[in-house]
Amino acid sequence: MTDIRDDARDGFDAVFGHAPDGLWSAPGRVNLIGEHTDYNEGFVLPFAIDRRTVVALGVRDDRRVRVASTFADELAEIDLDALAPDALGGWSAYPLGVAWAFSEFGADLAAVPGVDLFIDSDVPVGAGLSSSAAIESAVALALNDVWRLGLDRRTLARVGQRAENVAVGAPTGIMDQSASLLGQVDHAVFLDCRTLESELVPLGLAEAGLAILVIDTGVKHSHATGGYGERRAACERGAAAMGASSLRDLTVDDLPRAQQLLDDVTFRRIRHVITENQRVLDTVGVLKAQGASAIGELLDASHRSMRDDFEISVPELDLAVETAVGAGAIGARMTGGGFGGAAIALVRVGDLSRVQVAVDNAFGEHAFGQPDTFVVTASDGAARN
Ligand code: ADP
Ligand code: MG
Image (cartoon, rainbow, N blue to C red; front, side):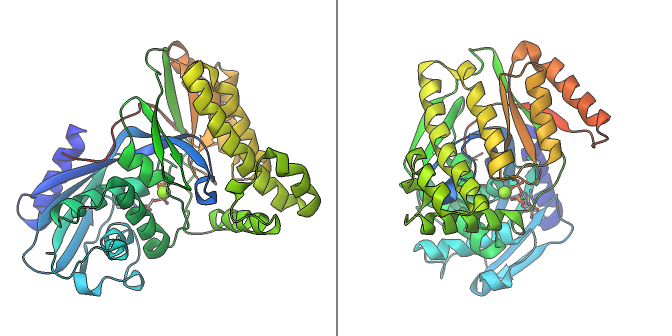
């Protein structure tokens, strides 16, 4: 953490020729359970992780916004008065899209000063750990502070989502930004994506001798294209055919009727969402009553549902999950939007190396690229620091 902060400060100095006025940071997230439920107004249970994106910011005395990142070669720049979704593209649509999105939430940007931004991060990009929400949330908190806009964190999450939906063009839900902004050390964020009410649920992993192992398959995904949008459309189609405004209004009791009414694919898509909502509620209940060591079967069931019903897994993710569980993990599932990215495994600390070695070996045997495996801890959300 100290390293990326120093790197962000140094990077800012190298690009803009002076020290920044301040540093803000926001974490990536792991979704413990509740996948593709957020845009269906359902439930999710993510936590903020100990990998962060840092924004070094300097206030300017004109209306230019310039943004650079260790991940990008070119400096992007635009005048505040020219900010519009159509004017943005590439990686800088994330930070500049956030600047634009404030105007959609009642902020008056007519008199705010321009800024220079330099971004550094140790959140893996495109791994399903939401580097996108980390960059959005860090920029949103920074601009909210220096422009004195006074928006609360729930609204900042919506600003980030708006940037991603409209400026980037990825039809993602509110989960990632909420985890990045509302997370707290050792807690998961239980979020109702309809009301946006949230509750911090203690995870108690360390006390129970447990850890969450991330297995980043290295298979890159993009939510701005392809399957993610198709899944979202299938959910909307299924809800409409069932006479519901969203899948949130349906329960497992509606599944027999859905099977009668819908084609097989649409039925399986909505069965995933409906059962996944129930698994989130069950996971929160089990965490409170019995602790994390008892949620393994819910994680496994979530993975099966994504693999067989929602069809967003890939062979590398399935192998990671099966191998981890076979080597002693309490439960495992792919995490994030799917089509690549990472899996998580809930593992007794004493079993960590065995699980890691087993996964490495299995990937080797299948001639898949070596995965990156690392433990994550539940950490605090976005902060000025
Ligand atoms: P994920 O959120 O799972 O990491 P996404 O496809 O949603 O994957 O978002 C990744 C994209 O976000 C990158 O391709 C890049 O455009 C942008 N991004 C994320 N972090 C950074 C960063 N530190 N610097 C520049 N761009 C970034
Ligand atoms: Mg993302």
